[in-house]
Length: 264
Image 1: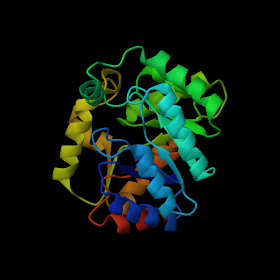
Image 2: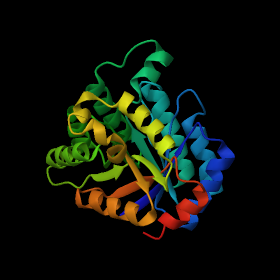
Image 3: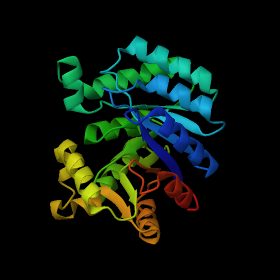
Image 4: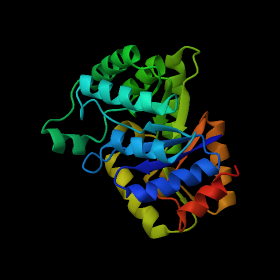
């Protein structure tokens, strides 16, 4: 299974640069940068990271057409794609509904149609892989039909069902499956509980159908000592997951965690 580093734009840039260099040194395949829309701008942030690294691929994980209109999104993606020279991947999705509604004043509508139109338009403008960070069944079907990969998060039973939906919709074409659940190497029950609570608040009903709330922390977070984490990752690989995103959070010493995970 391939490993990727997970960062978010709310993190201080200096910290992310340090982690990005550590991931490249440990031979991680990619860096995914999640956009916190009330913090730093994702394409500018990515441009700093590409200048600080040499070969690792970088992508948005994700950005939303409800945050930028289509011409602006295409222009921004084209600019960083040219700058990255083959190292850029575009991750698209609707994004967090409460945050987008707060930013724009309206709740996203016609989401499947909007994402499909966005992908079609960007295919004409960009020569780069397009991933979709989506959850609902119709969105997963869309990803299977039009995307190069899909970024998944949620309980194990849901992940299994999501992989099935994507594979069925892809009609034999391989669509890469990336798992980005919470990750913490070591023991920190209080932090894991806090993260689980946030994930539960944002989880759609479709994903909730596939989990036992009493086991939420176990199902939504990859955590524990190294050997336990390795076994859990093997389980996801058997479900059809191709790549795992490490962090955030990471563990008590993030740089050390990235190095230890790089041996997988």
